[in-house]
Image 1: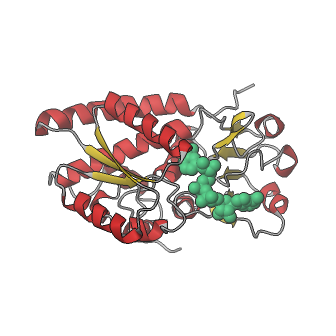
Image 2: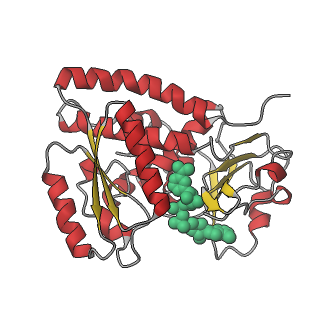
Length: 303
Ligand code: NAD
């Protein structure tokens, strides 16, 4: 029997190897490294852990990072001022805002302040607009990580029923555009969806990004479905995905474990976008290359 696990660690390793050659070449040619600014407001323990892990991976791959940590009471206006400073700092090529932000700062308003050329998370309204127009600039990291797994495991999305659970700006919404660009038929479920099982049971591919530990059970999944778990939930029993892995495993044809599925690829996507941002800002080229790899599907085609 074929192994069912989609191995994100292995794929991330492969992507990193390729990326490292490109980073080394960039650093040698330009005499400096791509630099990522990480903007973090408040004191969320999970966010602090993710930041450390991003910084560690960036350092290993010779991407510079700088953390800009602001108190939880920082106002949207003050944050905007700080982001403007980062926009005009020519030594910084990429800017990401770590989530969650304190409740009084709407993410959409904060991210809109980032220069779209430095928005390596791809979540600026202009970049989301380009993505939905079928002509993406920077592709959001987590949705792109999902697509990389799909590509690696040669899953043909054409005409397939894809159910995405979660409609967040960072994951669920950009995934709609990416899945459509590969000719899938997409259904998006969320907290107000009446019958989640009904939708999931007809899905060929289910992507879960709800932030609810073990939300997806075996009896909600069609025999042979592909199940991709984006969720990371810190619980008393340890780190858990949104998929009840043991329960779903017998039904799935392919499934991502947590940890070791989508997560390891996400950070490589941030690094890739930061490299592309540095190349772009060094005036070497007009469009990031991972963008080009997605085109040629339905770009500009509404049919
Ligand atoms: P979010 O809280 O912004 O959005 C969650 C979405 O899930 C919402 O749209 C909501 O409507 C939907 N939802 C919640 N409960 C539901 C339910 N019971 N039924 C149907 N829909 C439901 O979260 P997010 O930022 O999109 O993150 C989702 C999960 O993915 C979290 O666990 C987060 O930690 C994880 N995450 C992982 C990575 C990674 O690299 N693997 C990256 C980003 C986020």
